[in-house]
Amino acid sequence: MRLFVALPPPPESLDEVQRAFLPYHHAWPGLRWLSRDNWHVTLAFLGEVPDRVLPRLEERLARAAARHAPMTFSFTGAGAFPSARRSRVVWSGLDGPRADLVKLAASLQAGARRAGAVETDDKRLRPHLSVARSREDVDVRPLVAALSSFTGAPWEASEIHLVRSDLGARVRYQTVESWPLSRTTLQGG
Ligand code: 2AM
Image 1 (cartoon, rainbow, N blue to C red):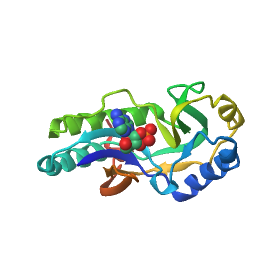
Image 2 (image 1 turned 30 degrees about the vertical axis):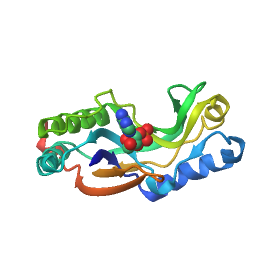
Image 3 (image 1 turned 90 degrees about the horizontal axis):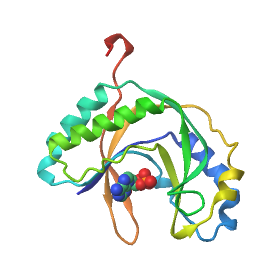
């Protein structure tokens, strides 16, 4: 099955992002706005994982989650991959302890690899919430500029989800399992 690990932001925070982008939908017909039900912050893309690897994978992810503490983020502005001038993916960014998030993602990826998930995407994480995609390059610089002052309320990232992605006419995401970020500051290191 095709799997990834993600942070599920709270619905109120997704509402804020949705409200911020909504006024621009009609002006950008080249963008395909993603279903709000599917919005998430990807931490690690694991690719195709054999069923037999799942128990070991879940053990490793649980262990990695337990080694990290909850973190506070807020959504901020807009950006695009690979660039605003030639965008294929439009996203909102995350303000907060990005270095901690990158560390969490690296530890999830390392755990997944050790468990036998061999297709993990090892590119360095650039934390974002994807909201739209396009098949062609779209110059979204005016959209990025218009949303530059958007900042959502702070929210706590306190758990990770292992999500199954079923590709088809309509992409479907289903949470397989979730674990709390349960390190307390008292435990140290
Ligand atoms: P995204 O985070 O920009 O939306 C499932 O495909 C999720 O994993 C999506 O959220 C997707 O992009 C993310 N992802 C990260 N690396 C990926 C890759 N190499 N292939 C497909 N999706 C990837």
